[in-house]
Image 1: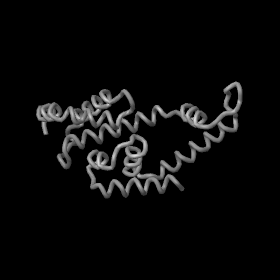
Image 2: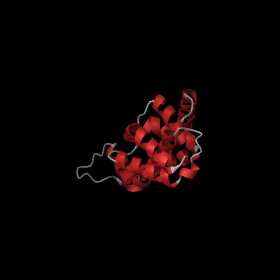
Image 3: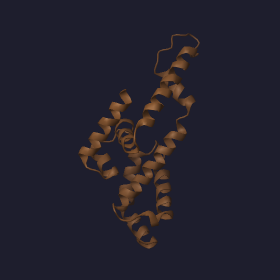
Image 4: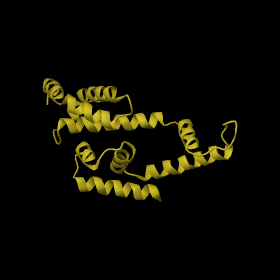
Length: 163
C-alpha cells in the first residue's frame, strides 16, 4: 500500500476508527489517540503487510498508544489516592492512616506482579473487557481473533490475576 492509498483508505474508514478510539482510549483523548495512531501508521506504512485490514492494524496501534498512556498516567500516587478513596477512612481530619497507604502500596505491587505474568495478548483482552467495558464482540473486532479466543484469553487473564 502506498501513501496515497493509505490516505484514501483512512478517509473512508475514519468514522469507524473514531468510534473505536472513543471506546478504547482514555477519556477525552479519543481524537488525539486516533491522530497519533494515524501518524504512526503513516510513518510505519512499510510494516503494514496486508495480513489484516488497515482498520485492524490501526486499531492495534491505538491500543498500544492507549496502554502506554495508561501506564504513564497511573502513577503510584494516583493509585494510592484511588485505593484510599475506596476505603472508609474514619479519621475526622481526612488524613490517610499510614497503614492504609502501606496496604495500598503492597496491593499495587502484588497487582503489578500479577499483570507482568500476563502475556501481551492476555493483558490486552483483559484490559479491554474489564477496564474499558468493551464487549467480547468488540474485542474480537479490535484484536482480529475468533470470539472463542477472546473469551479464553480473558478467562485465563482473570485466573492469573486472581492468584
